[in-house]
Image (tube, rainbow, N blue to C red):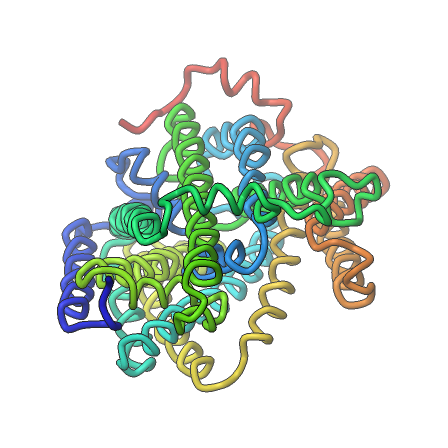
Length: 514
């Protein structure tokens, strides 16, 4: 039998863990990191550290709480969204990473400036990303802190402030290198913690793993009402879910600064490829473990122990409830640290990527001729300011019923990032696209997506087709407008499109950072 809730030992483990993360972040920060080193690292970060960091960044605590809840309450339908990696990763490796590495871009939006000869377009991309990221960071501090507060009795305000302050300290002092190494530790804690939780759950079940397999054989994997394929691509189906999620993920791989920043840490294409494949395997592995846990929790609470109070708990809280009330003392502390870890790695990455994007994409446009020391100082102040602002917003969220507003915000900004992804694809896949076409693509696809989201009934157009529509509209509108309106960016610079990839790969000019 497990314990009853959260003990002093668990609390001590959580405190020691947070202190260790802070110490590690400071250990990997070099006081003299300035300029490019602060934003891109010093070339000494191993590829596997960066890979786990991408994984830890994309796996937010929201996934931690909802993935197991999805399969607990329903089927494995949304597990198929993870298989979108099978599309996103080869696509990014084949068409985008060689170009990003060869151009040695400073930020994702640096690509837009170089490709379309437009600093304004670069700044617009950065502003959209920064708004999205600040909203995301606030909710990412609030959700796990609220769950921990209900389990531990600690004030939600204190939990939010502690999480924010620790992330601010190592983002502020050490730049990307600190963030990557601390993400690596957090990602490792997460992988081990969740796998251990599955082991304890299987041990608790009468019949071990068999009840989970039985449920998966009885429509708990996919229900008969969920079609594999629908010829009408606007309707939900498993095929559409894989393809739509694949292009969603691809959009964040190619146009979201927090991920692209990882790619700028090396120019070695082999390392970038290994980084991507490892990230994909980790993501599919952890999603599978979460879904097995959800199905196992259903077997445990709804079938084998329906009189347990846990059988009445809401789906999003069922996993944290199990962690607190069924796991041995100490293991609970480690797993709650893992939930905290998920949010902290997403948070520190957010702070660092916002600071980088603001400094290099926006501040450089406002103030010409900044030296590295000045840039680094601005980035530090931005990460501090944005961190404090996110803490305040997060505390406001914790004291107001605003989760529906978050869903609205995430849906709206998800559209915007999808639209940005379309502009990046326009630049990479066409030689003729120019500045006028890029602006037209951004504006028209934004209007189309806002109309579909708010003007068309939700049952008429599946959300999984959104990314495909926004990318399609961007490519068609952007290309046609580029053919009609000629401007000074009507010739794509060298090494900015897929047509240059054979030359990039054949070239031995790589200044590969050892």
